[in-house]
Image 1 (spheres, rainbow, N blue to C red):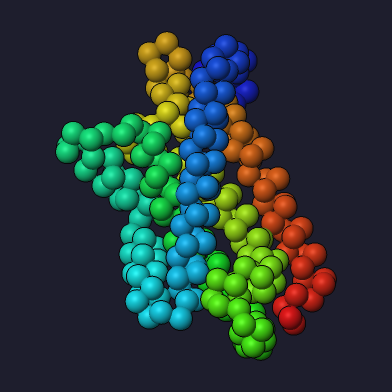
Image 2: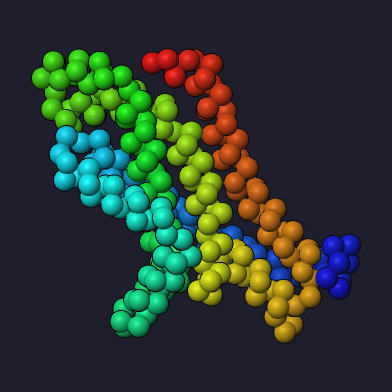
Length: 230
């Protein structure tokens, strides 16, 4: 019954379509909160990385290197089981939101740092000559210019966040991939492997493709405007 052309398998998937809808909804929830958290951390540590204080730069570097050089799966397991064994479990969905947000925050921080550092030093000097402090320089002069370079890679990170929600499978999550696996191995729903995973993949595609396309269009438009020569 697992064949992709099996009518019975497709009917079973359709009958239990609510399971896939629930999985997609949980995936979107984790992704949205993960994006918000990663953006907040990315902006914070990105600004710290470009600050004039060496201590803040070191803290930002430690965060980025530590997070980027350890697997997301390990971070999810560590947070989930460390809290569970300490008696302070926050649940699988919340664990995913926090873990994914922290993980991608490190990548967002690098995007912000690279965007700021791409601005010519003359812009910093000009802002300083006008009497702006660090916050004023960033808010009024530097960030408005760098945002055009930051947005496309940030959108790509959003796409990665959506796809990385599948890592919740390792702790028995209720995301799209986890519920798909539960469906194909269930006592009453098992067997429709090909249709179930195909539907799951299509749902991911429907969410991720428009975002990928948006990032591509932005990048193309920015190149046409010659932003790299700014």
